[in-house]
Length: 379
Image 1 (spheres, rainbow, N blue to C red):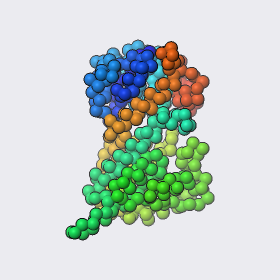
Image 2: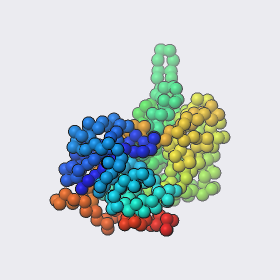
Image 3: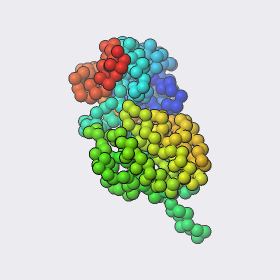
Image 4: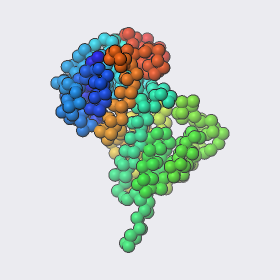
């Protein structure tokens, strides 16, 4: 059982699919592990660290992937990587398949079994495999750090002989995993925090962290949550009422953090240019959804834009901005999933294709696109 860990080809990607700790465990399961040279550089992991853990370091991607039974990646494999993989290899990564149906089809044509970690079901057994939560947690933390860095003022209230510095006012839009961590982090830094979300259950979570909840709490709001715990698309009428409430609130804020994402859809627009214009000069907005079209009008992917004197932060790959921490968690997510497909007594790869974790995440197998959400679109 050979496992390969290639270096990520995307320029903004600092994360890696395995760490020395997870490699030691994989070797304990009977695997041999090959890591591409420099794969861990963005996560502060040296080639020597991997070798010390028992891995072999390959000179390039082709050498790393040659004859690999399993490939552990952060992002969906590109065409060159697919060419280097053998047919039947299991490729485990965050595939980001929506809108990239041609790439999914290319994986099928390459004959690999591709698993999308972001499709992991939200059940107790799979909590340790939940890459969305582990990475969103870090993104929420980093959003506050990035916002504070751009704000240019102190976050907590400070009383000094020379006068009092008021606490920063932080408004978090979206109280999922990223939003809740943003709330907690901003509170730790001493800010006065408010938050909003369309899911009723979020109110109690927000208030438990010491923040004030802001929302139009009508009948539609009370029904606004899917069985999977995601936010539903709200009606135009509700969106209008919520936008009016948010517009009046946002004008008083120093830092706004937007985190709203709906799986498989463009990010909902939450903050308009008119709202931004109402904010004080020097205020900051951090858009965590910029890679999906953005929650904020005027946000620019990969840049800090200035709109009406307000800084709009649109950093790409926010978890990757703290690559060492992000990789440590992500690699454990992948390890936990792969472990379910290893026969520890025989020390060999033996996936159960009827396992609910496998059926929920597998995109391609045996030359076909098998996931129901993509099979028809790619046929």
